[in-house]
Image (cartoon, rainbow, N blue to C red; front, side, top):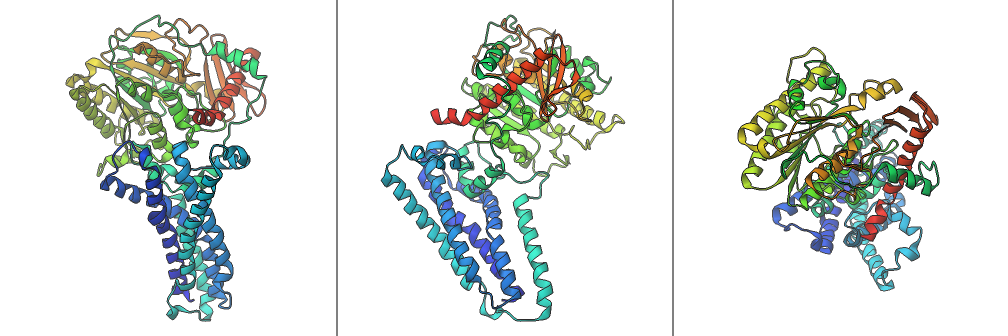
Length: 620
């Protein structure tokens, strides 16, 4: 083939690889698992499945075309080399692998309610146990189906190899082809790389196809081979880590640190309210004047602190948003060497505030002006029990965009609209909002303060003030509990002396449902929000193993734990200890053996808990 033939061959092979999953895999998955859908399967939803799912199909096609691209280059430069010599055995191997992945995914989904991923290899290490619950005929039928599906892919791929370019484009030996063909190869490889990685700020992940509150439709859209390949890079970073002490000693320490629910000593809510949770990007204590921060940065928030329950000694669970969201909404401490949001099959096993409230009659919604595919946010919010997601795509044509998405003012305006609509319908609701404008590089459509970070915080505060005015004017405020908490502080330099600064964050309960203003000076962690809130609502929270009701009579050992990259900061009334797990020594504060032991026990218990979440799913 010449250069035009090379291009046609490569494009057609790529198109067949992507089209195969649209033509064969998606209908097969839907037919096999249609009973898993809780919403109706209509024409519009099906079209959205195919449209959204094509992104993951295109990524797998870009992987699969790699060997054909190389073989085509060799054939173009050396016409005596026949494509079949390499691509026929390649197609056989790929076809068998695709057949097994497609059929395994379709069959196992009915048992797991999640897409096939790297955990399947753990089962294959012990095949007797893996197939103990099914008959030999069932396994044989599955293997035959995998071969049949693989044959469908092989027939198309072989047709492309043998007839994938017109005969008019047979090879010639012009000297310039030897120069142009490698350039063309690199260009096509670059295009495939962009398809695999994506053009966003963060690389693609399976969340790029998510669009529906019913996870069945998201899983229907998601290419199983892509989910499997991606999960291989997201290995389980929990099993066997942080084994500091015998298990019984660890359990004894942790049980004292995290008492089960007790009796609330202060009932500070006047009724069962609607709930608005605002996660404020990077809003550390340095920006909050009531906590000793700079004056005049957030005047609206400062005024609200005088009206509500202001928790003055709250500490962020970790240093990044992907750790903060599970801490706030699931009571799960941040992990110093991993992030649970990458392990999406574990997320449904976590307790979650939105899920608990939904089971008690609340409508649940998550709002974020950015791309929910970044850091698996759509996976997290849906797994946590949110029925509706509103994201950047739901603000078409909005001019107030920054690097990370739609700025906070229009997002908060949308939240006020949704709150008024839901309140008018008589439906109890919980809305979770994640801000983004105060994220670096701090470019906001606002100009009040000279320092960019201060000005971005002032902009979000301005948006907050505008929203509160609307909520009060509409009457929504009267029966509202608004929780405002930072995801973490602004990490200007990850040094031991700075961690104590940026881990200190504001936490505020405000709104008409708050009976009286009060300052609460108990040391606490971000992870305690869920149990404290549920305790005030009179709802159980003992299923949150790392969350405490700080207003209950059982809260007798106040402390906070903040984790950073392979280390932790443990604070209690006697002081703080910053312990580096790599150095195995304290690097800031007091090298207190008791605080070190408690921090180690929490990490050991935490990693063991997360490692066993998959087992919890199997037993459900």
